[in-house]
Image (cartoon, rainbow, N blue to C red; front, side):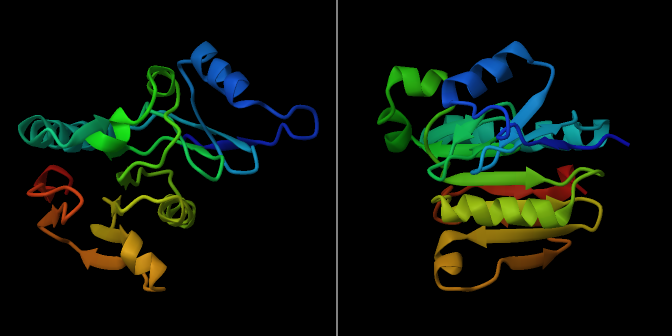
Length: 197
């Protein structure tokens, strides 16, 4: 079983954003995230089932986005510098075109300094739901408007909405849903979950 590892470099080194970017580029075979306090997480590659599901889901987003031209779709290799300082790489993410166009070329080339409008995390066999839920809340606290946490093993989807979070409401929990709607964040987007279950 592959496990994520956390590394706290703070006692010896406080990585700048540029140094973190260089570290990621120098180790392309590894996937790094960094929390708001600078602790690094080294994540294992996904297994076959999770990777296949991620590809199927991503392709639906790409097809929808090409048709509607409302934003940009990103895969799990893309790091975002969140407003709280964390560097995160959701499994699938989407940014509205006006927000993307407001970034400079240099900002687009590195880890875009913004929270996506939409994020999706697909739980793999080794992922902790506690850790994933905390990440989803962090996304909302940084401005993500809609997020899906898909637990393939238990066939459950947790839907995170910024408006619900701001009102103190818990995520909506769906048991064995057939599809998910992009709601007003991703107009007319419907994900057929038969590609996941």
